[in-house]
Image 1 (cartoon, rainbow over the protein chains, first blue to last red):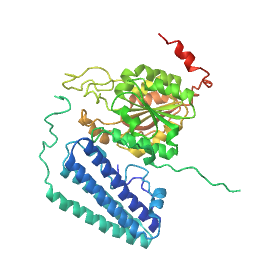
Image 2: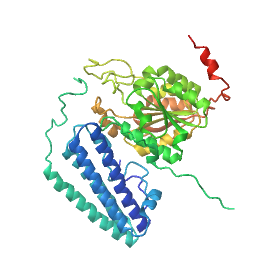
Image 3: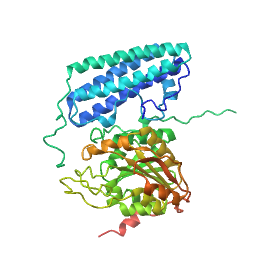
Image 4: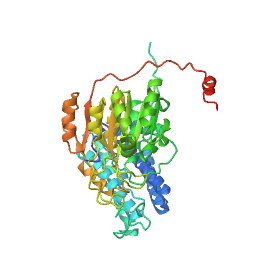
Length: 176
Length: 278
């Protein structure tokens, strides 16, 4: 199912800013939830990765707030920016989490989220009739493209783990 | 004269407690918790007017993670507790959370009679086809050939069919959801809570630790290609012949909920205590 199914209708520039803001805030919440899970399951390296990702998305959200100027994008987001079906494009997939996951896995989740956001804003550029919406969506496409490139750069630091990454020498129970 | 709408608008966060869940990362129950909060927010119910009741198991930890009233009961007895609560406090919204072990095995008999009694409450069973909390024993919904060190060669027992049992026993609303689709699940929960009588919602919620094979569920689930029916015969045929991955509202009955007249308690507790004096 598409990650943008049932996404809110973007009728004008304020709607677009509200949706863009909400997408970032949803991502912040999701990364913090994943960080909490890793904290509970004693994977401190991943706690840091997810908290850093949450912080980065929060900064993006603030940038959108600044772009909106005097317009109360937070209140408008609360009113209109609800994805009716499935999840917000940039939210990392919860069901892909694992207690032994590595930073490479976390960044793969992040990359997938950035790509979904990129596809979402690209679809707005392609379909918007209002030139202001089209221009702003194009800016957001540039922004998301940069995020995708950034995650690719970060991935160079974390090579793909071996196939046995999920092997637990003290597993929860024998599952022979 | 115009009136000011002073009703508070609730957000999902208003229904979540500060306690961090200890479920395994990747567990479907995280999504179910999210769906609860979304459904409650959509209904605009004050958290103090909702009671989440549970038994024992991974899924039954959910009351602690909500900011509503909660009752973490004994194994398999959540429905009895919830029914007692609802008939004495019909003003409250009662949601019961359970799992396939707690709900269908230890609490199996309560399940039948809760459906039959048709008290106005919502029963959510997070089905992962395994006892997760006690390390992976087969549950009533585990496949007969599920072969592990804890069930060598599989149990060879026919799995329990909760939706058919619920329909035959008199549940007034029956739906199946998938945890990985939290918005769709929240929408079904909204309808289940609003529907009068006993609503039963089975949520397929993968156990990533003991049933990693259930990760494939997200590719198997699909919306039920039918509209909900009020005809139990039609619903029975649908439920008995579907592939187990049909999602949506499968039956919407119109039985009157059971709500006995319950007056205010007029009992002097100190008098009652005397009966138990040794």
